[in-house]
Image (cartoon, rainbow, N blue to C red; front, side, top):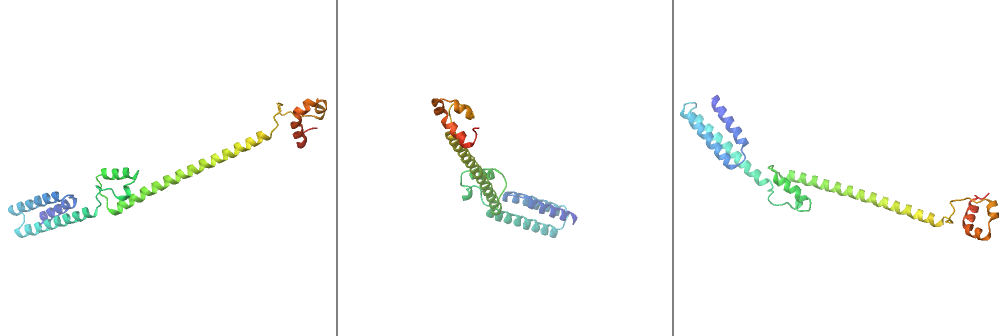
Amino acid sequence: MNESQNISSQADSQTQTLNSAEQIKMQTAEAVRQIEDLVKNGAMTQEQGLNLMNFVTKKAFEKYTSQAQKEEATPKLNEIPEFFNKDGRIAVFDYLKSTDAEFDDDEISKISALVESIEKSAVDRYLRELEHEKTLNSENEAAKMRLRAIAQNSVSDGSTNQVFTREQIGKMSGAEFAKHERAIMDQLRKGLIK
């Protein structure tokens, strides 16, 4: 009886690891042959052998039908799902297709959500960088405009920021005064002339 339980558990574990209909058929046939040999050798009775064969064939049938249902439920990655039929996403689809893993609807949904999340974060990051660049450009333009305004309003008389004194202004000729008049008036308004 112990040997029949061993064969039964062996047949059960073999049917659990099968992954194709042909393998299920081959392993079931091998298990039936082993049971027949055990019955012929007297290791088990005819009734025990028949019961064990029924058990093995039942387990094989369950495995076969469960695998067929699983294959029907598993989306075939031969056809591109609508979600992956876009630029960039096709690379993800090609990767999934190249793996030997089988994906059900839930897993495909999770992968789709992950891809969308990655795309959204990439777009958000790009938009933040673009906004930062626009801000820097507008600040640069404002600074340039202020510099231009300062340059236009500053006195450019050839002197190097010389502050005139009353004495110097008094000694100037009319031509010199006319030449420096703008700077002198600006300094006078600022209270720099002493």
